[in-house]
Figure 1 (spheres, rainbow, N blue to C red):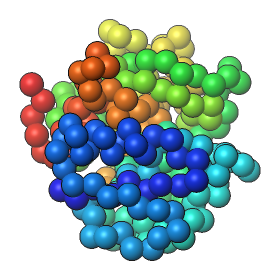
Figure 2: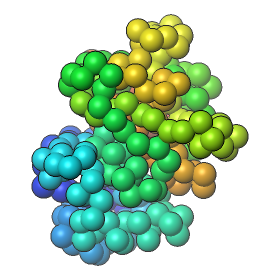
Figure 3: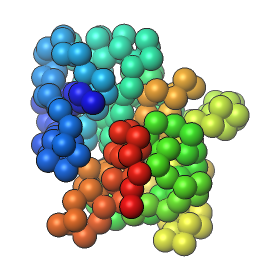
Figure 4: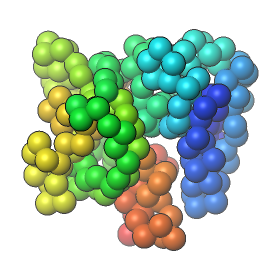
Length: 230
């Protein structure tokens, strides 16, 4: 599989993502500069984490208008697979590719720590390798990660199985204490109705190397590749 990682001014997780894809998963990956327009025949596009354009206006608000995004949006609307992580998730929301918005954390602080997320829907490309309600330990690093969506849209999302992950305790329980940013219904990741565009705040690329003592992120990456995680 050929992956494309879009690099914006201020991206700081692109190298981590490329390392995981290239060195751990042994897949082809190309850097797609934000001023480019050619997606180079990639099978899967990733918008990485970071602080695109310094998070001016709102996180992801300027990056959504980068030259490459026109083709990324067209690619995704035609059914191409697209994953946005952290700032990438914010960009997806700003572009209207997934429902909802990402607001300032309810504690008004930048949260950087390991959290636990429960797999809410295993019937997507990025979760097919997970068990139902499987708990994954994945790091977060964000100041604007509080997912919000209105009640009617949330109802539709539930009907369409668009909720991918929820913040939870290590035992898989949903609680205020386990919700690091105040996201509505503890939501940590969602997809579009067609289930080809995925957004999540936690960073699976930071939990994919044995040297880090945590490889839970590989469940997500190996799901994309259709591989089984031992």
